[in-house]
Image 1 (cartoon, helix red, strand yellow):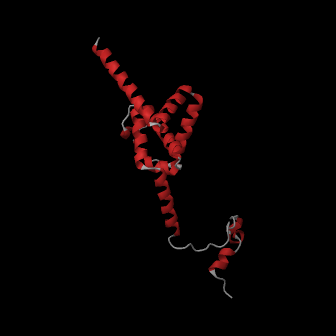
Image 2 (spheres, rainbow, N blue to C red; image 1 turned 180 degrees about the horizontal axis):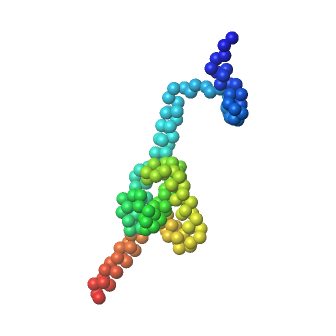
Image 3 (cartoon, rainbow, N blue to C red; image 1 turned 30 degrees about the horizontal axis):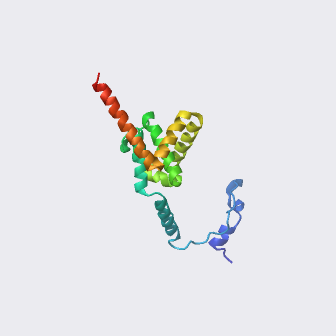
Length: 174
């Protein structure tokens, strides 16, 4: 009687390994064929769920607020520039997107065109800096409040505008 391919696959892996190499046996027995299209359907469902959590308009609003707060353009914030003047605001942006939206690292990465590992690194960096430096904690807390509360954002913009007008009149009076 000849052995089928499946019989060969169910044989212990150690017996198949040449020259005494040890290969771990399969974790869950013989492989079963998956129903056609099942993986694609699940992926589409998870993408729809991620899209529901991460509304692009909300993400763009957060990007604009962080850019305005840090005196950058949204384009500067999203480029791959590694200067500290741009890198720190970008890390805070990634942390805000992760904490405010509650989206996964992969979903946040897709929205800002970064790898999920980069998002994880940036979130950990912000948390570490905030834990050690009270001034950074105050800055990040203020920025978070601006993103969460539109009234606070309007008040901050008015204070900023008054400060700019005051600086301009001080220069003109010299």
